[in-house]
Each structure stands twice: as structure tokens, then as C-alpha cells.
Amino acid sequence: MAGGNVIVIGEAGKGQTESANARLIAIGDQLAEHGGGKLVCLLAGQDIGAKAAELSHYVDEIRISDSVQHAHYDPEALLRMAEQLVDELQPRAVLLGHTFMGMDLAPRLAAKLRVGVASNCFAIRIEDDAVYFMRPMYRGRVHAKVTMDSTPMVATLQLGGPEPPLSNRAGEVKKIDLKPAESRRIRPLRTIEPVRTGIDITKADIVVSGGRGVGEKENFALVNDLAEALGGVPACSRPLVDMGWFSTSLQVGLSGNTVKPKLYIACGISGAVEHLHGMKESRIIVAINKDPDAPIFKVAHYGVVGDLNEIMPQLTRKVRECRSQK
Amino acid sequence: MNIVTFVKHVPASAVTPKISASGTRIEEDGLSYEVNETDLYALEEALYQRSLHKGSVTAVTVGPVRAKDALYVAYAKGVDHAIHVIDEALRGTNPSFNVRAGAEVLKQLRPDIVFAGIQADDDLQGQFGVALADAVSLPVITAVSEVRIDPAKRIVTVIRELGAGFKEELEADLPCLLTVQFGIRLLRYTSVMSIVKARSRKIESLRGDAQPFALQERPASSHLRVVELSYPSNRGNCELVTGSAEEAAGKLVRKLVDGGVV
Image (cartoon, rainbow over all chains, first blue to last red; front, side, top):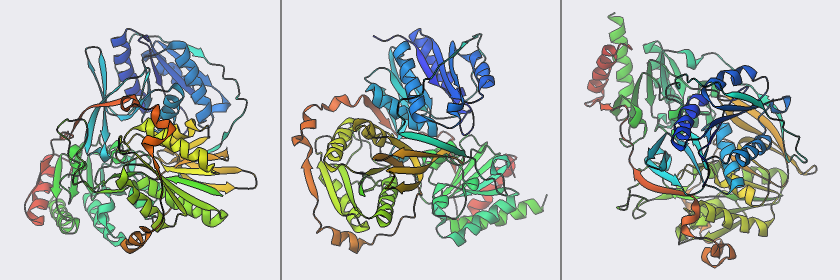
């Protein structure tokens, strides 16, 4: 029987998703308390002392590797540290963010430890002594309650949720000495920063976003027109970037930008899990889609089921009328 | 260049599958299937690399008999060989069986580079490529969006995504495995006729239950167990705005005005 310790693998530094840390700590804390163990955070990066000090208030212990070796994400180095820590603490769970680091590292760790992994979890349920994770399947059209028959449980958690309340902890910060690997079959060369062009969709109050359902590129004018009428900005989902229409700077979602506008209008976007990551915390979400079963309607506040070509011009006209009366 | 690419046959993503009476799996009856989307991107990248470096591309799938359709699509797109590990018992849904089957195939083929999609649209786990690489001790890089192979130096240089528009450049020794992100190449259109014609191509079949690795496998040993499936509830309590396009637009604008956002 393993102990009740919980390891959370935090994120800090260039190209990492620090917003994942809040959820990790909140859920990690819940699991550690349930198991009567310690909550320990593993953090690797370069110049991350301040971030470690900040996180130490929320955990019992923080293990930090602050080194030029972590200037770029190095999966093999981080894997060795995580394995070492698992070996020492024998935790019941290892939690990571459902970020590009977590999605990479969690299956690596699970494979090494010969245990299962539940990725993309949006909730955890503790029922008596059993721990269940809630996660999407079938492109988010079905939710699964899953459990793991192996220890430690390895899981990646979706971002979001409130900041954890400041606890009275003063977690000790311990430095890890990571010895260089004998042979490195994967060698990180550089981190490439995003090119920011023109519109910053993350700062807009109103975002009108088009997806695959827009059809032809000329049809994107419908999205532009509505955005303009509303005084907002146009954005898009991943397929339009993949088709070469737009750059990542206009993309909403896990691999693009996270937006939290007052109004988000999703046009012809089915609502793949990765897209929802980037917009589900918008204040009012409107979805326009011809598929009434599209997962986007599960997070939307208002929905219109129908043809974009018919609805959007009408919507733009009504918005213009309404705003001209003000 | 000996290239292998993995494809998974998954339920069509545009349809919500029906949950079975047991509540722990989906009904297969009446479901239509397609090639997992990121596996199609992996396939395009494999074929592109063959165009640069010559050699051959072998497509591999693990799944029930119907999964051979995924290999016909791969043939129609231009692969040279196709291998099907037929798994009627677990129907391609057991991650550790899939990895063992894939590992067995890789041991026989000894590829220079292996491609797989970053995640499967059905289980959304994103685990297969990484676990497979571990099983055959290959280096693996995930979420790859650009690939440059240097066959002389036996090195591959890749760009991978880090999220929020950040990317990372890394190099790895060959042989290695890359999991491919959406959009790495444009997906070429495949005509129905070309898929029909591909049905005359030979698929090498291995019976999953007859393989040495099958003997060690028990259905329960996937470590991750689905206790219950459900349909997502309407978190936003989505209010559907109905009527003609004009009526719906008018109602929606009034709601947005009331909500203080217009």
C-alpha cells in the first residue's frame, strides 16, 4: 500500500503554462488531504526562484531544479527528475497540467512506471476510498468516469477553476541536483517565441470566432463583419490555421491563445476539447452551429442551430441597427 | 528510408456515439468509422518524407476486422505496404495491447523513423506513441509540426508545439518516433474511387490472439478502467434561440443587450 503523498509537476518559465499550477495545487491538495500525505511540487526551469517562492505557500514541499539546462523544455531530463521523486516519495498520485508539457511528460512517466494515465481530466471525485477522474472521450461528445488500478495514479488536469485559497503552509524549497545524462538521444536546441501580429485577441472584450463550419475562405467575411459590427475582433479555431488561412496569433485554444472576453461568439466551431480550453471562461458564450449535438453547445449560454450563411448576416444587421440607435 | 506510420480506425467524429446499456462502452452497431484525424496528418508527413528521401512507407493498424478500411485509405494515399494486427477480442481499445502489438511489428520492420498522430479521437489519451516508443526503446518527441531528416548524420530536427504559440526546436537520433500535430501538411483529398481501387491491395494480417504478446495480456490490465460513460450536461445551460434566421438574430441581440455585452 502506497502512502498518501501527492506530487504535482508545476510549470514555470518561458514557453510554459503557469496558469496550470492553480488547478494542480487545488486538486493535489484535495488528494493529499484525503490520503493523509504531503503535497510536493516539482518545478524545473531557468530563473524560477520567484515562482518557486510563490508556490511554496501552497504546498508542503517544493523541489526545484533551477538551471540553464532547463532553458528549453527537456523531456528526458524532467522525466528523470520525476522518476527519482516518485521513487523517493512513493506517492498515490502524480498530477500534471493538460498542457503541451504535461501531455508529453505524463505518458512518458506512466510508461516508465508501468502504470496507467488519465489525460485531460476536468474533475476529480472522491467517493469513500475510491478516486475517480472525469475526462472527455470521443472528441468531447461523451464524458467518462475512470479509475486507475495501478499506483501511482498519473493524470493531466485541464486548466481553469478558481485560484486555490492561500494556505498556511510554508513549504520548504529544496534544490535538486540533476546530473547530466550519460547519453542524450533528444537534444533541445531553442524555444521559439510566438510572432505577435496586429490584433491581440487576448485583450479584446468581444471575440467572434470562426471554425471549420465557415466552409470557404471567402465566407470568413461573415465573421469579420459581425466582429466589426460588435466592435470586437475576429479569431478562429485550429482547423483554419491548419488550412493556412491564418496564423496562430488569431487562434483560440490550447495550442493558440486563451481568451476570456465579455462575449465570445463561436461560429461553425464544433467545440473540440482543445478549443474549449481556450475560451470556456468567457463571460457570455454564443454558439452558432448546424449540428445540434456539437459539444460547443455544452459550454454555450446561448445557441442558434442553423446555417451560418443565413444567420450571420441577419445577426450583423440587427447588431448594427441596435448600436446605431444608441 | 524505412518509414512506418500508425493509423487508428475510430468512430466518425461528427457523430455522438450511443452509450451501451452497460454504461461503460459505446454501441458499435450502426456506427460509421474513419481514420483518426491526426493519423492522417502523420500519414501525409510519412509520404512527404519518402518523396524527399526515397524508401518505403508501411502503414500499421491494430483493431478489429473493420479496421482494415483505415489501411485501404492509407493505400489510396500512397503507402507501399500495410500491416493489420487483427484484434477482435479487445477491438483496438486496450492501450497496453495496442502498444505490445505495435512493438512487435516495429521489431520486425526495424524502421528508421516512425510516425503516429498525437492523439486518437476516441480515447483522447495521447498515450500510444509515447508508450510504444518506450516499449521499443526509441526516443520520442510529441506534438511535432515540422520535420527535417538528415539521413547521412542519422539525425532528425523537429519543431514541436509548446502551447500559446510557443514552439521548441529539438534534434533526436534516428531511429526515433514522432507524434504528429494537426496541420503539419495539408491533407490531400482522397477520392472514393481511389479507396475502392485500393481494396485490391494486399494487407499483411497478423492475428492478435495468436501472437506471443497476446498470451501475457488480460483485458483488465489496461490500468485505466471506465466506470461510467455519460453525455456532457449543459454547463452553460445553453438557451436555444429559435425561429427564422431573422427572428433568431433579433432575439439573440436583445439577450446580449440585456446581458450588457452589446
